[in-house]
Length: 350
Image (cartoon, rainbow, N blue to C red; front, side, top):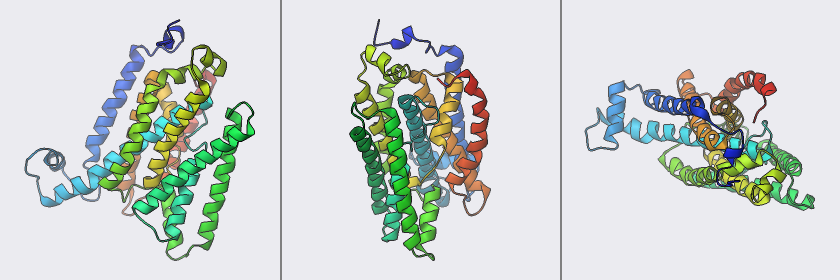
């Protein structure tokens, strides 16, 4: 058996129709990106939007100073950040669903969002903002997952089993949620409490190019790592024993995937707040389009996740003068969509 290409011995063959779906997702993402350049409170015509975009890259004159400022300082960083966060959450969700062999797993299964939320709430309580808030949220998100994994390792004689890890993640998530509730209880109800509540709802309204730079590194490392491990994730779908027979170190692979996905999720939550359902729904949609083969499923999840969150963010920008938090919109739009996806459960998820 050729271990370098295990899909040759498995039903994981993408086929041209499903590869066509992958390219369709790429085309839809490009169209969304171009359309998003014109969406916002400061309206730009297609000519002004594209000219301002080109002026940011090439030595040409922008249509106006205002158009250039809006495009370079506000709109383009927000669009790229939305795509980056959506890509990271969807890729993390797909990877976690493969590692845990469960279609209901999301990137927060080990408590990273609860931990990051606790860190952000603590920073806001102390009056920290900007980089200090993001660093605290990022560190607490990583600490939550480390605690959950450590508890699972301690309770399992033969290593961190899937069930024990899930239970440990639930316990840690509950613990940090209680911490957030305690912070909200003692916070100033006039100023601090609304700031904490709004942050926990998730938003990209205040992101800047600096935020994009901060999140780009962890996301690049995490996505690159997961892409290199795609065929090994295929092997995990058959179970631990079958994966070991293919020469995969299951415990090591599981740890690497958890670390990579957690790194991305914690970085995204630290700048955007808690945005739910992206990492749960998008991988299911990707499976319907390209199938369960992780060699094409992970890239498709990344593209669809970027497009999904970008579309939701565009909707948030035009829905009202005061932007609706992204966490609310993803739940309102994602829940009915997920109910439609449940009709495919009888066909199998993997």
